[in-house]
Length: 283
Image 1 (cartoon, rainbow, N blue to C red):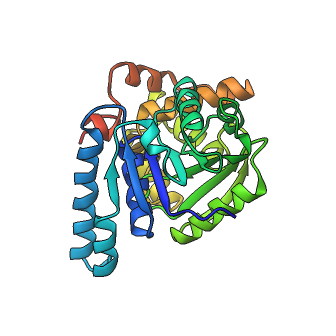
Image 2 (image 1 turned 90 degrees about the horizontal axis):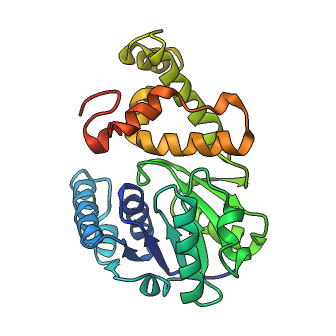
């Protein structure tokens, strides 16, 4: 089984930053890349602020804090990121973009480098088809916020080898995550259940069945959910939910996965949730 010492992260947005922090705190060296200039450097500032906060609250030991603070390096190209032992792609949910990234990584990386995607819905088998190492392509689906959420959903594509799966499960254990293994079908385990529920909550709001507050309180206090479905959608991003629902609808052809019209309308209006300051609630 391949020993992993350096983890590369492609995409320094909210998810990429969170994954990078988890990797650093878990003892790995981290290479961070983003296609947009300056984004990775700003991401490091956010990560450092998060580490500072954890240390001040006594939730991070000084030795772990010191090592994690020194674990990061920002790189400028995909060729640089390919020096890692494992590369985790955390770009937007766009299959064309992901395949382009994986093709470039496959060409630049040594033959034994594992390529993982944080995709929440796109086929790992299709992503792997853009490479010549399908046995070393796998899904590592972290949940937002990655430093807090305990689950790591490991997704095996059609050709993913057992050795690759075992390596990622070992990394998940090192990261103190609970791991589940899913077969490569759209939505995998969690989003196949979760996202249609979020979508249904939007249908309820659109039909006037309840206010956003009442719908969320109904699920929080009636089902003991820690967060209401509409607030959770705001946290995830309405555009992200729409992308997943469109994948589910396209892949399964079942009307139960049809994106709510209100969801599509709000995405078109740029009301994407917390990241834009407004979604179903204002921030």
